[in-house]
Length: 478
Ligand SMILES: [Zn+2]
Image (cartoon, rainbow, N blue to C red; front, top):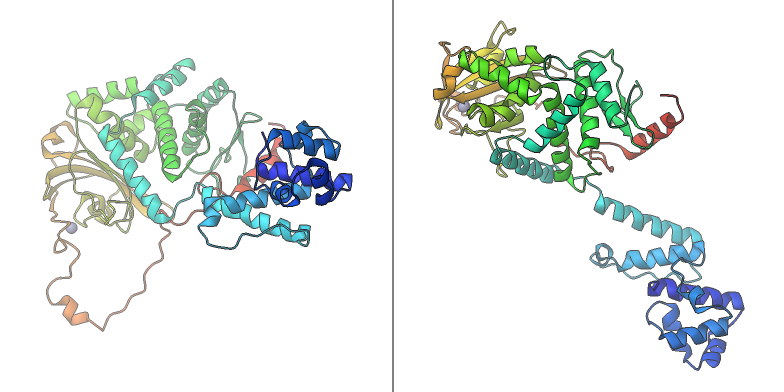
C-alpha cells in the first residue's frame, strides 16, 4: 500500500481530473467533506470500503488510487516536501510546517524542496569534522595495535592475486600489475587530466582504472596506486558510510597493495635470513622489492611481530617534527593530544626521527639509542625530501631487540624525558623572562592532515569533478 501522502495526492488528482468538488464526492460516498479533506491531506487512512466508494465516484479503479507513484510532477514535489518536513532532521530545527497550497508556485516549491535535499545530503555525506576524523583515525590505530598491525585475510587475498600472475619475489613490474588488474576485469588507463581532488579513479561500469601518466617522477608509486584501486574491487568495498569506514577501507587497500609489492612468503624469508645474520635493515627490504623506504618500513610493521617475534614502532614526521603517521606496540610514548590522537603532534626533539635531520649525510640510515621514561629504544631513521616538506621515516625496537639490527653498534645516544615539558619544550631558565614582550613571531600556516574535506561520496573527492571526469572519459577508447 502506498503511503498516505501519496494516496491523498492521487485522490485529489483524480477528483480534480473528474471536475468534482469535495461536496460532490461527499454526497456520492456518504462521507463528511472534512473527512475526505483529511484523506486528501494524508492525515487519515480510509477503510478499504470507503476507498472503493471514492474510486467509483471518481471513475477510476481502487488500484489506480493505491498506485505508489505521484500523480504529477507537482504532486511529486509536494510529497517530497511532506516527507522532508516529517523527518527528524527538519523537526529538530523547530521551524514551521509549510503546507504546499495551490497559491505556492512551482518555483517556490522547487526551491524549498531543493533546500531540503541539500540539507539531507549534508547530513548523510561521509565527511567528518577534523575532530571526528582524528577520533576515527585514533580508533583505527588502536584496532590495528590489537592485531599487531597484521591482517591475515588480506595477506591471503594478496597472495592469491599475485600467485595467479606468477609473482612471488623481487620487484613487481607495471606489466604484472596490469595483468593483476586484468584478472579482476579492469584495464589501467594513464591520463593527465584526473580531477584535482583524486589521485586515482575507477570506472566500474567500463572496467577502467585511471591513474596519472607513467612518466611522472617517482612513478613507482603508480604501481601502488593501481594496486589500491584493484584492492577496492577485490575487497568489495562500497562507498564508505562514514569517515571511520573510509579510513579503514583506505588502510585495507594500502595493506593489500603492500602485500602484493612485498609478498608475505618472500618478505618473511628475506627478513628471517637478515635476522639470523643480525643484519635487519629497512633499506635492504626496500631495495630487494623496489619500493619506497616508507612502504618497506610499514610492511615491516605488518610482519615483524607475527613472523619475527619483534615488537616495534614506526614514526613518520615532517621536517618540523609533526607526526604524519605512527604505529607502536612496543610502548614508545607517542605524543598524544587530549583525544589520544598523535597525528599533528610534535615528537621529542631528541628522538631519532628529528635528530636525523641534523646529520650532514642523509643517504644512509641514522642509527641511535634513545632513553625514554618507557625504556631504551634502538631506532633507525631515513630522511627524505618531499613536497612541501622534508620528512623522516623511523623504525625502532626496544633495546633488547637491537641485536638483530644493522647499526646497533652506533655510539649515538640521546635522552628524552618527554612528555615532561622540561625535556625539550620549556625554554631554558631565564630565556623566557629575557624575551618576554620583546620577541614576536608569525606562525607558518600548515596544511593540516585533517583539514575539512571537500564534500562528496568519497571523502576528499569533489563529486562534480569525479563524475564529470568519468563522463568525459566514458566515450574515449581505452
Ligand atoms: Zn623531548
